[in-house]
Image (tube, rainbow, N blue to C red; front, side, top):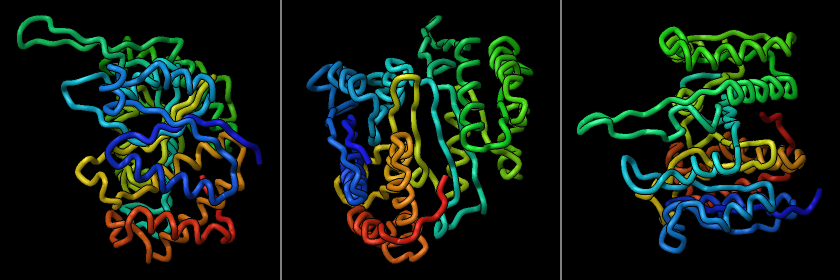
Length: 341
């Protein structure tokens, strides 16, 4: 067990509350972390005039790892998304979203064990848009062979490392023959480097239908930025929603682990938010650090709290607040370990 310097971005809205709960749980594992606290998004605008201050980027470049709470992104106006800016500035090209059933949480499907790997730096998220004429705007979709091959290789390497058997690429190359066609060709070329891993592709609308009808036919889904954003939320809904799934943005040099849900300003400050997504994102971070024992203990404890059902939050049908949930997890920390994703 080592000692670590890690950048911490508590976020806004419910961010500080679920971050505090998560830090208390990590501390209970005994992992020694010195948190370098930074601000971003709405909190950073009055002080720095930008959502991602230089101090924050310097901190992540120095520490190489960050844990981030949710940040508010204003719809249709305001400053550029801090999340998108961080991904582009730090070349966090791989968005990792493992989605797995948690015993004790009722959901529409059983035995879900999927991983979404999403390209994180281009596509329509490049933000290249302009007004052609009054009432007519245009957004440009950018797909490159370099980025497409890079994310495909990351997905196959992840599959190989984690013992996964299959990668499915989603696309709309039947219509967008040049852009999605390039993504599909790149993924197909990379797949030849990994003959032991099954590879196929599906048109994105059919993929979504197949996910609803029979999600168990899939293992790893390899998607471009926009499709990945939509499908990862769809799949989260199969296991209980965004409040119980983790996320990570990973590049060759840096990694940012984050709760993928919104900042929920309507319940901010009430200490009633479910911190599970933030806790599980921290679990991914611990595994990234090689602290598997601590990660196993957290997963086991969270699972036992949900199975017991006495200290779960309102979104899951309980009455516990954020602090009570975290305290219940800590109390279960010494329990036997279960397998986790």
